[in-house]
Amino acid sequence: MRNLVLLIQLTLLIAMVVASNKVFSQTYINELMASNQLALFDDFFESDDWIEIYHEGGVLNLAGYYLSDRDDNLTKWQFPYTNAGITTITPGGYMIVWLDNDTEQGEDHASFKLSPDGEGVYLTAPDGSTIIDSIVFPMQQTDVSYGRECDACDSWIYFDNSTPDDENTLLISPTPLLYINEILILNESNLVDESMELSPWIEIFNPNSFQVNLSGYTISNSLAQTYTLSSNAPFDLTIEADGHLLLWMDGEPGEGGHHLDFIPSSEAVDITLKGPDGNVADTYSYQVGELNVSWGRSTDGSPSSGWFTTPTPRVTNSLFIIEPAYLVINELQPSNLLDTVDNAGAHEDWFEIVNLGTTTVDLGGYYLTDRLNNPTKWQVPLDVPDSTTIAPGEYILFFADEDGSQGWNHTNFKFNNDGEALVLRSIDGFSIADSVHFGALPLDHSWGRDIDGSGPWREFISTETTPEYCNVCVTSVNDLSHQPFSIFPNPLKPGVPVFSSHNAIIYNSTGARVVGVFGNEFNTIDLPSGIYYIVADMNTNIEMSSQILIVL
Image (cartoon, rainbow, N blue to C red; front, side, top):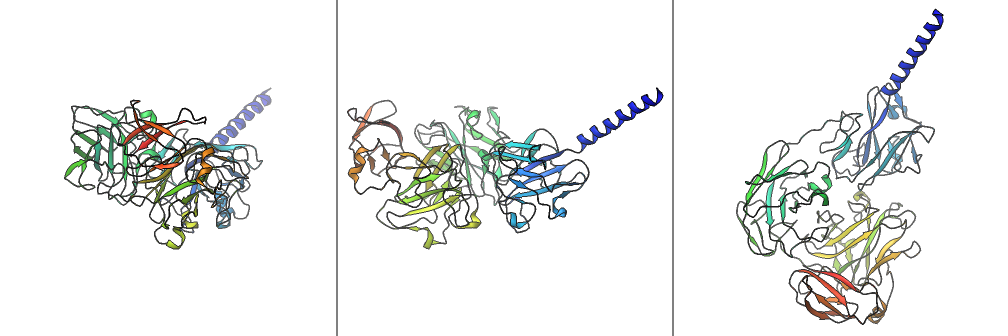
């Protein structure tokens, strides 16, 4: 009996030790960066996506384990057996894995990249089915990591100061020099937000040579109104070096991190911006003037201020308007699996631009962005005019793959598979040449104009995509008579003719008739800035018979 009791006790002790060792030896995906430009470089001096794996227990060789960004393909990439010195984690240690789709660079370079728009990462056991750890992460900001609040903790947060190959610790950066640069209180028709709403806005200017994440900063005024910016939206709140950020003072923080639960009081004429460390970045006194007239610093960061009858949101206050050429975004593909390949043989997101004008245009210096709050996110290189020059009627193809090392036409952003916006601006970073909002598309389908340049957008199946070629080739403007109702350009700049596919009537926001336009031709109209509704002639039997027209 005594031996039986001892045996039971020994069995329980062994079970407890095994259970304790199992808990202690857990392995975690601990931190990741899905958009890396300056934060960390690999042995080849390349800044690629990365994840950090943390192991609590003894020595662990990950050879034979798997990493993937797809829960339906857990064995997408396997840690090689060829170099235990790289694939082994020391007790309580870390391992950085580069997710760069470049396995030739070593055993710690995986065969896929991460999407900064958010996706999943899965660490799987050698059996190919047992998931050791995983994380489905939200949208990411360049050079800001996303990780467990502490090593092996359950909660995940953004790290403005990433901690690769080290303990996860939240470090608060000192508040740098920033300027409240421009403010518009009475916004009746100047600028709409992503929900097409008109609200007061404030612009912050970053004069530094590094980006600044405003997460955790506080906006306040002398009437004790105050709001602390979200810590969960660095993608909405990061100001590029020497850049500008627009914040909407609309009381609707649910619309994004750059929307404040703060509506300026009519009795206050001051704004203060304070950093998470409690230090004041800037205090600014302003005036409230006429509708759609902003108050701002004479030049960016200047001590003197004045009125701007043409407000300059998101760009320099010293803006010199340079009208764009007649360039149009014509087709795009946000999910390329087997369609077009780039110069490196990879299937990347792409879009094309067509020159509808009568003169040759150099695209060098133009800006492209997929984020409305960052209009100058990527600039077409200025030093390759032989490649960036586009003749009338010609097309240029760009790859949205966040990999500028592969060539001049590779942008620093990728498309969101669920849909987003793409905007083309002139070299002033402000004037819009063209823009498009698109939704989710099936693999290898594209979204393009029908007909090219002026027609409405529609989906093209995988066998119909036409990169660097006309989508629906026509030889005469008369071919437009059978197309659905469309207008172009939209938004419309003052003095620029508007093309309407059919006879239509334009109404203002109060429903009053303003002017009529003729179909199948360009119409010269003079409209103040604002939002209008253009409605096709009631006798025209077509779909999509009304649209919103924005006049800048």
